Image (cartoon, rainbow over all chains, first blue to last red):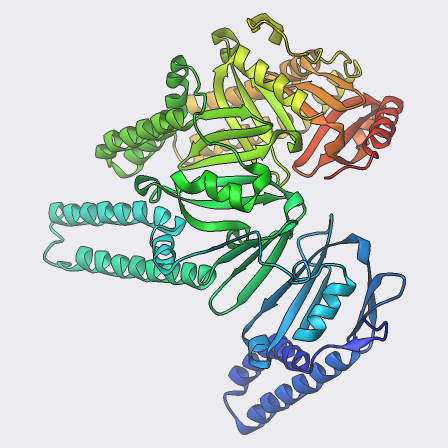
Length: 461
Length: 172
């Protein structure tokens, strides 16, 4: 790539104009509202848009980038007070491309350059770069698209249409909504009874029904939105792996492509949501170090997989983490009581508070039953495994999470003991992976926890 | 402590428990720090109790109970917690790992492989300077761990030693 400073594709001017319009939108709206729609204010609004166009053009003209001979990427931008960003090529950790609606219109890509140890935002964002230039830039930054496109990827997995729908319908959003539906139903019931008691039934006969209807409508709308959201995010989900990196492509409106160096994938998490577990389904997430923090969907390695097939899929996509997820060593039976206590306590406090404030004492039993089931579920989910340098930790926090990590890559591990546990000869063990995610095993035999602590120590050297 | 429960054959090499203690006046420093929230807590509870009993007509017992609970919490925070925390705190910086033991009631032992350390820094506050104390913060990709209540020269020495040991290049 020539070291000459280059401008972005002219589509960049359009992007900058839109950005300027967005920035100016509020003042323009205020102006129109205050002006009451007189012709002079309309003129002002048009003037504002023209000014945005000029500003967009100037910003595009003043933005240049180049890769200097000494291997530094230099981005200059700013009309009146030019700023210069310098990124050594050796520090570039990822080069991602995205294609929003505007980029699609012009057939160009947005290029995001991220450095190791950088913050959440990519260091350099080039809004519009033409395809051939993207390849040249990747070459210059030494992050080529794939090993020179010479062979097929070592693995490629695509999300089928049926799986997409299943993923959308059983998405985590529904897990939140379902109790909401139940809650609204209960409240509506309550209202109905109360209006009965107080003789309001004549004056407001339809109120509870109307409330229930509005609530149902609202929930239905939320459902549709969340399902559509999942489809938009995961449509066309494809993962490819070559020797060094994972490439993840997804999205309906905004085609996103992200590449992840395999050596930065320190752990994989199998998440079995409340609605997915009964069907034996799960999502796979990647836990990486120093990758830009983005919505959950970007940390998705694969949106939907049969839990039974998860180990095979992990082995295909992240061979370094290939291991069996079964059998896991459970905590001792006498720990069950301790797993039940916390959820039951929370439920009891919630039920009493609810009873005192609303008089809904009937809720005590269902709440306690739900809490007991959650406690039992946590006990039965808890388990660990350490074999061939891979550590597996499973725990349940509503959803069931199974972390698979290379023991030598753990950021830290800890064993802790409360005074009560000390008396009972039990202890907790927690591991932390590079993304900051922690896996905690509660109430193991103290001797087991110690043994695991020292085995993990041995593995980390 | 943990050895009490070991019943295995002990074939695996075990890390010795960390041995170094914090500066003795860390207890005093923590007590002063705790006063920072304990005193306001008691004052607020007194005001709130008066407001509830005289203003909102809550039962008179509350006027005594609320400040009493606040005072007891403050007393535990100022008198008991700093001592227990100091008694439990141990640390060691070895060539290949940092070994920490902490906790006032729940005792946690944490092991951080040296290769995972991204950077270290020392921190002093206005109050800690009065005691000649500083804290060392160890940053990894997963978060940070703090060794508090160290004599300032000790803290600087530990920081430099960890920085030196962690410099050996490795994957993050």
